[in-house]
Amino acid sequence: MKATLILAAGVLLCSGTAQTDTSLLARTKGRADAPVTVYEMADFQCPACRSFEQTNAAQVDSWVAAGTVKVLYRPVAFLDRASTTQYSTRALTAAAAVVSSPPSAFPAFHKLLFANQPVEGSAGLTDAQLVDFATQAGADAAAVRTALAERSYATWITTVTDEMSKAGYNSTPTVLLDGKQLTDWTPDKLASAVKQAAA
Image 1: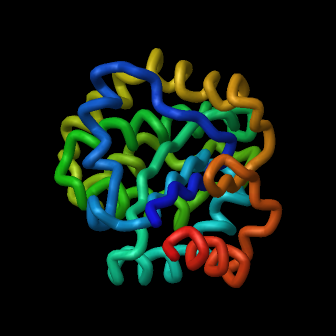
Image 2 (image 1 turned 135 degrees about the vertical axis):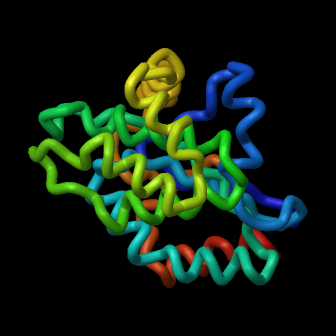
């Protein structure tokens, strides 16, 4: 049975802009015909999202490798107040620029940002560090540098982040399975939910 597993830090569905419509493949990993689709929506400044990533990434990656799950990343930026330099928005700006790179770049960048997540209340990673991590992930450094300098994706970031609240989700991370919220996303519970969805 095909099912949709939505993992959301906040949560939203992307706006209908051409930018997001044409970038879905670059924010997806796994086989297109995988029976379970995981939508992971996170703020790169969110400690709980980092915890979810660290706790579940290996398991999710194994499902992807087995062809059971495909992952679609839907990041948002709502924790600018948790840094002195609007880090959430800057990180998502860099991520949006990475989307125009080879499809493997975004998942790699996603992992790097959570592995190097700055402490809340700090200035966050610098733009130069974001460019460096994007380059490590396989993205074009010039494109990411330009996006950060020009704040190229500001309207899109505002739109997708506002949709989080409009969808009625205000805590992070929020996990939905077939539209029903899961209150426990520990590895065992997540595995049980995926197994049931894929049956």
